[in-house]
Image (tube, rainbow, N blue to C red; front, side, top):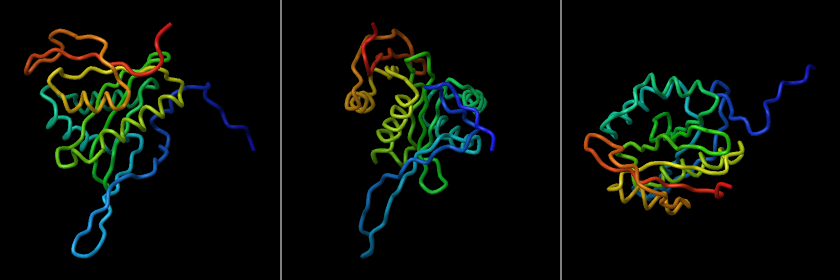
Amino acid sequence: MEPQEREPEGAMEPQEREPDRTPGFGRRERRKGAWVEHMITVREMRLSDLDQVSEIESRTFSEPWSRNGFETSLQSTDTLYLTALKGERVAGYCGLLRSFEEADITNVAVAEEFRNQGIGRNMLLVLMEKGRQAGILRFTLEVRVSNRQAIHLYETLGFASAGIRKHFYRKPEEDALIMWSGAQAD
C-alpha cells in the first residue's frame, strides 16, 4: 500500500473531496401527539447546492453573488463554504476567504422560512471551528449598520466592532460595521 499524500498542516480542505458531515442540530416540537425533529445538517458546500444557494442569495441581498461567483469560490483552496441542510433542502450557507492566519467571512444567509431557528449561529460556529482547525486565528466580516439582528448574533459569537466602512453597501446605500473576532494582531 502506497502512502497517501498529505497536505501541509493548516491547509484548507479542497472542495472536491467528500466533505465531513457535522452532527445535526435542531429542535423538537410536539405535533398531533408525536414529537417531530427539525434536524439541520451542516456540511461543506457542493456544486449541486448552487442552484438553491443562488436562489437564497438573490432573495436575501440587493446585490447578490452570481452562481458562477460561488462556483469560482468553491474551486479556490483559500475558501471554505458550508451549507445547512434540512433533508436535501439548503436552509442556509456561509463562507470564508482565508489570508494567512486571518479569514474574511464573505457570506452568511439563511432562507427566510428557516430564520430564527439558530441555523445562522450554528453554521458560523462550524465555519469558525473548521477555520481554527486549519490555523485561522482571526475572523472579520462586514455587516450593514442597520442589521441589528446580525450584529447581535456576531457579538454573541465573540465579534467586536472595529470601525466603519463608509458607503460600503449600495441598493440602498449604507455604511458597513467592520467586526473582528480572535487573537489580536502582533
